Amino acid sequence: MTEEDKRILADFPILKDKDIVYLDSTATSQKPESVLKAMDSYYRHDNANPLRGLYELSVKATEDYENAREAVRAFINANSTTEIVFTRNATESLNLVAVSYAETFLKEGDEILITVMEHHSNMLPWQQAAKKTGAVLKYIECEMDGKITEEKYLSYLTDKTKIVSMAHVSNVFGCENEIKRFASLAHERGAIFIADGAQSVPHVPVDVKDLDVDFLAFSGHKMLSGMGIGVLYGKEKYLDKMPPFLYGGEMIEYVTLEGATYAELPHKFEAGTVNAGAAVGLHAAIDYINNIGFDVIKRREDYLTDLCLTKLEDIPHIHVIGDKNHDNHHGIITFTIDDVHPHDVAAILDSHGICVRAGHHCAQPLMKYLGVMSTTRASLSFYNTEEDIERFAEALKVIRREMGYSE
Ligand code: C6P
Image (cartoon, rainbow, N blue to C red):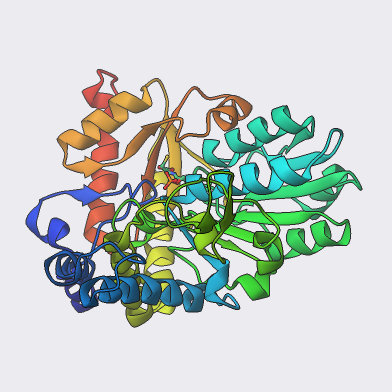
């Protein structure tokens, strides 16, 4: 274990205290001490219902919550905090756009364009929006390794396309889609572009101005923070025109028995009591990521991904899904083992103390498209080590024998 490994591991209590190899960071990341402390401190010292009370404690809670919003703004380089809406998670962020934007502005015959590799959270909201508006939902078919070429993308994009929504990084292939180029081509045809950043924002710098996406959705819990906080970035010109998504307390300006006027952005989209504790955790998570730096995060994740893929390629009967280029996996290694069900693979790995995910990874249509029932997925993060990969590879080598095969 390197000195850098030791320094990083010392920050993650769960990894220090348990003899496990955690390879399920795509589902949710582990949390560093600084994030745990920040959330604990918020509830111990600053807790009150933000945005409501006029007393000092509530004002402090409001400040903590709004400071978190500013931290998110700076992190993704948005123009203004009015463009940062706190939600529960990426799923809610995507639903917000589908309901509030698509259901308001789409009409029969308009087209919504997504891909076959989307997570259900970036698929089902569009299926619903299409049903409700009469719009047509079209799916871009990727190559078997996840690639979507510009030529392919253009073959689906028409003058009727009004919305394109796509994963920045796929949670199954780990590949990165060419969001910047695809957004620009969508804009040329008058469509808006939504990036699902659930698997990119934790791993690579994401600059919404550079990418020029109209909306970006992501989850705090996948980027070192607590559960229950997500982000929807949206260009003000769109958020401004969109009706509220949920109605109730805190999102209003003035209410009468006959109706209501709504709060300014972003509060118009944050109905009810907010998750200030998790927002504070997200702020601490952003500080942690900025402190360690994406250069270190990426160097470590790329190195470990390459090491892992190289080892897996040498083990008979294992088939990795996705790009042959190891650099296009973002820590995500999805695979099958001949004649062994992924649930058995995961259970055997668990008996070796290794945590991976097995199943369809909330991408059932993609599994069908690839012709597999389900797969096993190992997903790593910068807090993993060479020793983790070694232990994982050694355990994989014995799985078929544990299932009764001779080799
Ligand atoms: N994928 C996985 O194990 P939520 O659940 O709202 O935080 O994130 C939804 C989501 C949206 N888009 C992508 C690309 C995702 O990967 C996810 C979450 C996890 O793959 C949990 S199913």
